[in-house]
Length: 164
Image 1 (cartoon, rainbow, N blue to C red):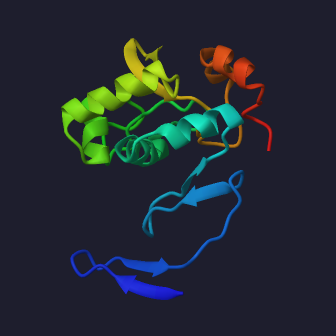
Image 2: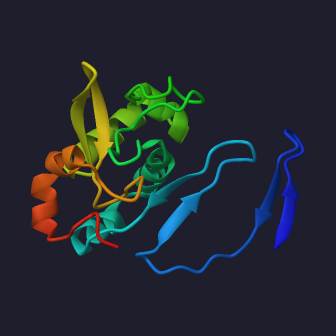
Image 3: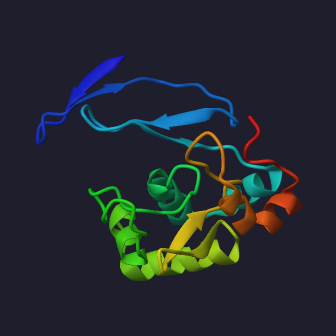
């Protein structure tokens, strides 16, 4: 294990190799002093085929926005570092998170909605985006509202996002 120090911020990082199966849980850690958040990556065969077809930009975008999914709901919400905590993130916020232009983020979000990776829903009178639990799930299980939002895709895939 190698120790790396960011000269600009002084943060200490450790580099290590992790071997994992495709259906294992992946943890995303924040620097010391911040809460731990994890995103479960477990995809159905249909979802895996779709994920393989994503462009590098689309795959990177999905990977960068996944940690912003609310626990159990998969709604993309702020965390006070990016956007207000608990408030739905806009496409403009997602563009900043993914470090891309607003136009590119809009295009990718549109493609993800067409491919049923993302879906729009209402949250506190505002439009929010939710990630399909067949692709990524934040938390140990998906809430009923999330399962209902993606009911058709889940039944087509024949997978239960809450199974381990």
